[in-house]
Amino acid sequence: MTKRIMILATDGFEQSELMKPKANLEDAGFETTVVSLEKGEIKGWDQKDWGESVSVDKTVDEVSDCSSYDALLLPGGQINPDILRMNERAVAIVREFDMAGKPIAAICHAPWLLAEADILKGKTVTSWPSIRTDLKNAGANVVDQEAAIDGNLITSRNPDDIPAFSKALIEMLGETAEKREMETA
Image 1 (tube, helix red, strand yellow):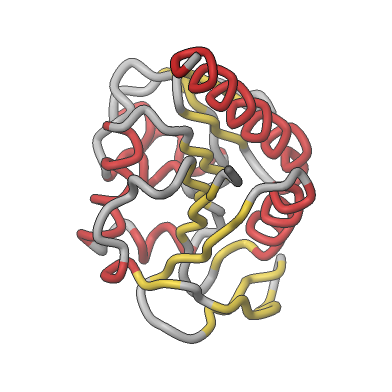
Image 2: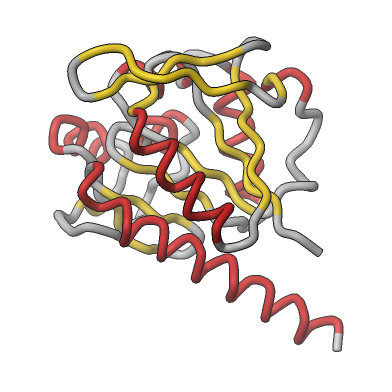
């Protein structure tokens, strides 16, 4: 059965941090679903100006539970996670994935959502430098490396880290598939 990855984003997502991991996941045989606050399209931010738009597959309110998804991808950008962390359902989705022990991959400013969901206590994470104090205040151990993996959390700093970020998520999804197969054997 094909694994399904939810990509939670809204206007102002860092274009490369959604598009490249999405393409990497799809190239690895995974199905991706873009979930946002409203129907239609969301517009990316491409370094210093508005970029391309992406079609929204579902709204947060159309996701009654997260059981049909295998992982959560949270692209960064300064605008996107700042808007999402103000939405109760978006934050609840992050909590649901964490409570289920499913992989959550957050890059750049996206770990703000992890802090808002209150799931960082005792976890080792990384992020864009300007939000590291917020993560420390949320109880995280913050490191400066291209990909920090702690339990079900995968975090990265910026677009340069996308290859390591994508690889870590793809490998974690492979490990969860192997574990499930062993449990059912």
